[in-house]
Length: 318
Image (cartoon, rainbow, N blue to C red; front, side):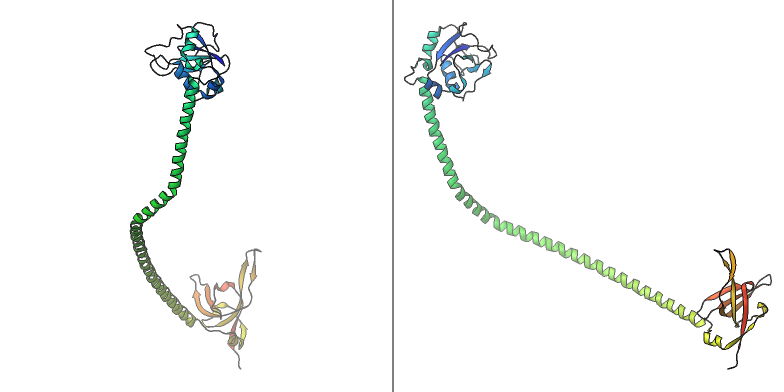
């Protein structure tokens, strides 16, 4: 493969410049050189004769990676641009040298196609070194992987032996703290329940006293009610009363009440009722009112004008 090389101040130049222009030198690479050499190898050989880092190589304004092989990036007729990595003490002199002199100074171009050149030899040495390094690294990795389980197991056992007493002590202390806390909570809860029980007992006693008092009051009210039974009333004969003014306390009467029908908006009479005159209440205007007690304890407090069909009882002769 034939390429051209040109020294530039910057890689930002026109694409594929004319190799015949001043400063361009042609270079021929064999197939073996292309297969084994890298961009870094080419930069090192092109930078011989200068002090400093090898030049940066590029094509059509694009920088070529150092680790890439030549065969994957270079094509027939490509112009490789060389840009100094730093200002060298002895500049690259490709501009002042003829193409033949440049080719003669590059071992990469001087080697014939039938035998490996300097780039091929350097590439072969580096490849062999790379293989040996890879083999050593692989062996070390295998040794580490083989030793890893045993080391881990030993380390785990050692940590367990060291950490076990401390862990047990910490666990015991933690359990004791938890037990003490639970005991305090249980004691406080028991005290609360005891206070609540005492309060409930006090409330129960108060309620029992109130029930007893109400029962006594109820018994007293029952004992003070006038007794009038249906059997006793049945033994009476009834006489019609001309005027309610003749009714006296203790008389047993049968009557109807004059009621007002709120729905029908008209007066009506109640059913026949039997009661005992518990009290006669005279009014300031001369009217009379009566407190009438039924046999079941119910009472009517009515004015005399509301009493209708009043009959008073008298004992019948048995």
